[in-house]
Figure (cartoon, protein in one colour):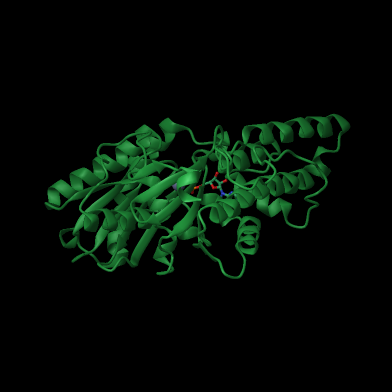
Length: 352
Ligand code: KG4
Ligand code: ZN
């Protein structure tokens, strides 16, 4: 790289812009978290798109100003182009494409999940493949095996709700606020996580060899179990007192599933290096469980919230990789669902 890169993130409810220097270090990172959704306890797509449109120019201008970089100095403009809310994505992609065109520099479309894979390396130069990655956020939950940048094997993914979505929905039904992850983690602190026996969906007893589906997730049944318990407590008039314990029991179940599968995945591919990305990776219980599970020979890479939650810096860093790699992996226009470039199915027999 010869110059700074601007990265733009607008896939969901964060408008973010960051400037990275030619060596991939953050020189500025600005995140505007939309609060219009708090009223609804979830992201309203149309409101998200409108707010991105209002914020994108001032957020980008602030990032450039804080970095002390003029637009004409930029080497490229990268933007998250998939997956996400289509109206929200269109704002970031259109703004970035137009800016790059006006400056005569490349526009680099980035897959949001690849962005998350590049989050921790912004703080720790050793957070590079090979690693097993758990990317868990409000929109996605998947386990990947990354032998190198750009080559990813899909070990498993959620069959219904994302892990963060489950945190958000449980927080909503327990009246704990939005986003649910930090709210539940806060209420769970000091509460009794073993008071309510909740299901561990798709967590099967350990067999000698991994079977298809072993690394898939499901969170909607767990959420329903919490809802049913909450209804029973409400009927008894004890929901207010019991809500922190129910929240703690839910967190324990969700973390148990996420951590156990991640540790088993690392064993299955015989790689003790694990990366945690996405908003849910901010969860301290999850970090502790994974860290303890991979043992003293293992390495766990989990960035601070500023690089783990949705942000423009991870998009800029993945964009730098794509520019250096000379391929955008087939990424182009904004798409709600384009697949991760370089993603391949995983064959346990070929890798085990
Ligand atoms: O990566 P992110 O900022 O955006 C998406 O791509 O969705 O993740 C946001 C999600 C939300 O669902 C939020 O509840 C969850 O991450 N989250 C957490 C924690 N902090 C954020 N979940 C569990 N524990 C946390 N501490
Ligand atoms: Zn994300």
